[in-house]
Amino acid sequence: MSDVKKIATRDSYGNALAELGTAHENVVVLDADLAAATKTGVFKKAHPERFIDCGIAESNMMGVAAGLAAAGKVPFASSFAMFAAGRAFEQIRNSIGYPKLNVKIGATHAGISVGEDGATHQCNEDIALMRTIPGMVVINPSDDVEARAAVKAAYEHVGPVYMRFGRLAVPVINDREDYKFELGKGVVLREGKDLTIVATGLPVSNCLEAAEKLAAENGWKIVEISLRAKNAEKTNRRMFYEAGVEEFLSLTKYAECVVTNSLHGTIFAVQYSKPLCVFSREQCDTKIKELLAFNGGVRYGGILDRQR
Image: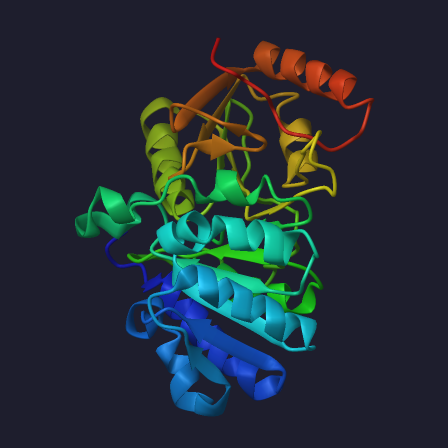
C-alpha cells in the first residue's frame, strides 16, 4: 500500500478546525502547550483571537473549556490522549460530563501509534475511560476523510464529544463518492461470508490489507466493518453503545468467524486484556442472546466476552 496517499489524522484535525473556525465564530480552540504536535497551530494561525494556550495544565484546560461552553461557546480542548483522557479525567467527568456541557475534546497521539515517544505516552485506556462517562460521544476515525467529518459532526452534536486521532500517517480509505459519515453507524468496507473483521480507528487500513491477503491466499470471502463512533447511553449502570451494532448483528448471522481488532484493546462495552478477539458464529449468537436478555430486549448493545 506504499502508493496509497497517507495522511495523519492529527493533521486532518488541525485543518478541519481551521475551516470550522472560519465558518463558525463561536468555535474556540484550547491547547496545553502542544499546538505544533496536535496541529491546533493551524487554527491558531487562522484565528489567533480564538485560540487559548493553557500551558502544561490539562486539568485546568478542561475547566476553562467547561466555562466557555457554559457561556455559549463551542470549545475544542486539545492535547495528547494520555493527558486529555488520563490526567484530566476527573475534570472531564465532573465538570464536562456531569453537567453535559458542549465541550469537544481532541485527543491526538492515541494508542501505540505514538511509537518512539514511549510507553508513558501510549494511551491505550482512553476509549475505555471516556465510554464510562454517561452522555459522552466517542469518535475514533480511521483516516483523513473520516477525521475531517468527525470534527464537523462533533460541532453539530450538542453535548460532550471525545475525538481520537493518531500521530502516524495512515492510508486514505474513505475517499469515495458514496461515503457518508453518521454518528453511531458502522461502515461495511467489503462484502463476504466466511469471515467478519470488525475494526475501529487507525487499524482499519491494516485490517483491510490483511483481508485482501487472506482472500488471495485462502479464497475466503471476508466482510470488514469499520466502527467509527460510540454513543454512550445516559445511564451509568447499564452502559451500551450504538456503534454499527445493526451491521454487526446482521453480518454475524452468516459469517463463520468474527474477528475484532483495535489499537486500544477494546470492542463495544468491554475492556479486554488482549487486543485481538475471535468469535465463532455460535459464540456470537450466545453472546447476543445473553446481552439482549440482560438489557431487557433493547435492540442496541455490545458483544460481551469476559475471557473466562
